[in-house]
Amino acid sequence: MGLVPFAGELEQLLPPDIPCREQCIAGAARHLDMIVETNRQFNLTRIVNPREAAIKHVVDSVLPWRLFEDADRVADAGSGAGFPGIPLALVLPQTRFILLESTQKKARFIESVVQTLELPNVEVYPVRAEEWLGANSVAIVTARAVAPLHRAAALFAPALRKGARVLLYKGPDAATEIAEAAPETAKRQLKLSVLERYELPESMGTRTIVEMKRAR
Image (cartoon, rainbow, N blue to C red):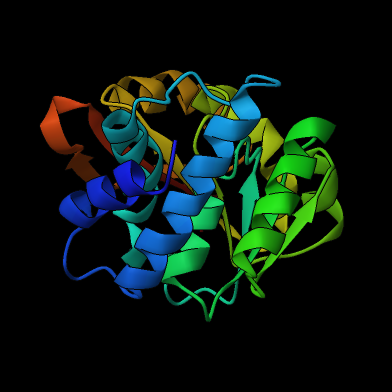
């Protein structure tokens, strides 16, 4: 599969006000192309239909870009095939992104994407997110396919102790998850709140961005 389907889809789907839009289209199309190639050897993602991949991987990753634009360093915990870290790094070249992925094959794949796209603002570490976050500090930690919020509270406690905010990409039932996590978050003196909700194009789902931070 060539670059044409992905680039064409992204040209249609990405909002006009996305920063560095042309670089994002070119880079994200190449990234998706590499996923299709690599999926032949091992499974990175189930979603390879061009339009669905463009929406569920790239558009989903970058729509809340404004929440990240003032951060100097952002850690993407459990980056998988590189989402949301790589698309965000394409639209926010002034922000440094640290992609944390403990599955060695996946970490090697994202490293190859970073080299191919020549992204100077991205580092990849093949480690468990909680280990790295326990020893390093960032302004924001983000994650897309992460544990339920009651488990995420324990996972991201080290980062929160160092003053980070955690922004989690969750589904439409985030309010239920926040309520279920209340005992755990109260115990750890954390506060959960919904920062943003958006609909993915073509009825491909509702996204909720949940912020986790230390209660004052």
